[in-house]
Length: 236
Image (spheres, rainbow, N blue to C red):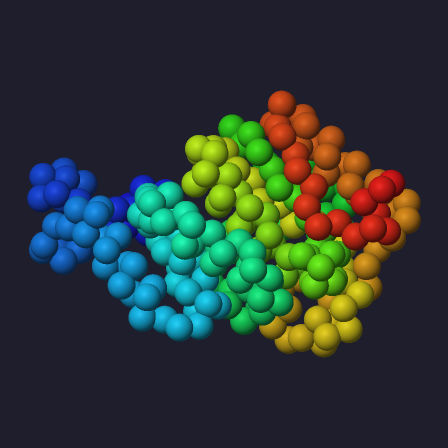
């Protein structure tokens, strides 16, 4: 329970809840309200001066306590939007391998071509309604960041949940990994994607069609938003 960010409430559980859920002894004795938790976290955030470090702390909170994460973002949208999306998410994408802590979203690579349907079945949420998908070729004008581009679907869907009320369980961040032509990433030992040149042409188009048809069949009515595809493929 404490390790599932969707339901974990940290030290906010009451004494009665701790007894009922078998959490006694697993959290500090003092029970804190979510407002106290929020004030504590904002103090931690304010102590950091580097915007990227703030981003990492926010993502760590999302990975442990989504309820608190979204409360803080909703209550402080003006201040936090630049941290969880542009401009800071650009630097986070450039250094995604360095700041990586826990997988978030779904990765489908060109190596999964012909097997996409079985990959999509692994997604735990069966009522996903909104998908933001990228192949990472043109991330925020920063160029080809390949699999490091996952920060864009994650960040955009966080805003959709906080600002538009779309339930996080209905959101599917998706990264299509077809390689990268970024020479630096091809040599980066921390790179999280396929270290091969980008696949182009018919193989790419067939792969994309397979992905889209699988999403359509698996999640009827899903809204699919294409994000930061390169001009070489965006207009096909």
